[in-house]
Length: 126
Image (cartoon, rainbow, N blue to C red; front, side):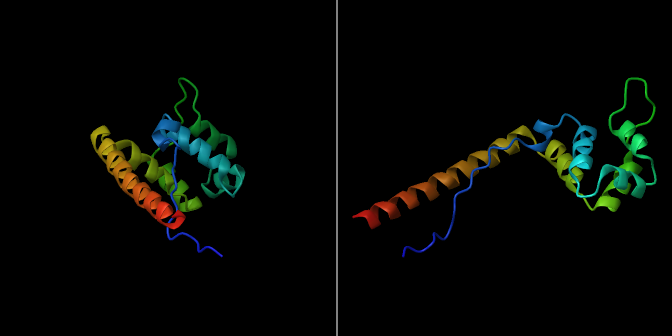
């Protein structure tokens, strides 16, 4: 029986969070909907009505109710969901240059791994 490989190559073609969601508010509106807790429960835990939470996350033009920093901290504390921080880090802590450099380094690393794997396969096949 052949043994399992030590490593497995995984490629991720998912766009980065800031590429999928235009704003942090858009991202949080999505996250509220996919939490294990219903949005109604999250809103209650945040001491607001479900309609107020929805209004703050998807305000209409001229609406003064906005999801603010205090709401964000309350959301994180209530849900334990820290992906909003990941969103902000991905959007503001990475320049295009550093992102390109990381991608290039990863591609170079994968190229080496693929070459080694191909050599191993050829050696076993002979």
